[in-house]
Length: 377
Image (cartoon, rainbow, N blue to C red; front, side, top):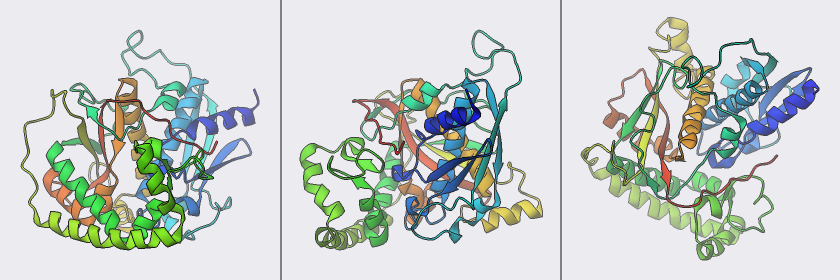
């Protein structure tokens, strides 16, 4: 098989990676036996993801999927994170990717022979496979708890500067309501969400990207009623105006309510899904020196973007591990997008100045059929 054929296969596999609103912001191309990845401005979320945290995490997940496919074929990857990834705020609001401004460059080479891993080998974790990438499950319905999920994380899943914190269901519910109210109360954020909804099979992008009614588990009748509001300005604009008023009222109400007290630990409770926060620590990442601290401060995310790429890779491994164990995940990026919810989350977790909450998600066994999300490729 030619190198171009191999790289094309790996790009196709990586397209199954997760991204906020299923925007798929990556634009890979093969350049002289390497893959260069640029960001598509029109596939970012300037209002809802103004720091580009979700974009960079998605790029990390894309790299991890690519690496898993390469390893399955007997190859390793060399990843070069390019300077442009720290200048994403210079991107235009819309338009295609600029092939002359890639953010990642990946080369593949034959992997060195090593002892097998897993139960039959030397004790290392069983490598993920392309099928794991394809079968990764996102489910936005009811989840059943799994006491053993993420119980014994190794360095292969999380580096020392990343930690996975569990949070109480009552707290996550309170913060999620705050986050949803924030989304509704900001017209530009709400409009962005509506833009990425594909609630009708007749939508021209229904089978390509975005959030379908199936992915959101919306009943057919609700999807039929809501679909026109996503595409017709004369319906969308009044709906957004109402959403702003209602969202601000709900947000104001929940901001006055204290966080629920921690209830009994959900570990061992099979009646509900579990809720996790991926937290990065600048000190453990070696950013206490002057240059590293400056990188963290200049990043809108709070961590240098190359490290956030690594965090995205780790997050993808966590989600693949959950899927391999029969669990699904449900992302809650609205908790970090909302300043009030984010501040309350930091307070509840006791996060310090060196800590950055990068991702929030629920995980558990899905209590229904898991829908398959659309992809461009």
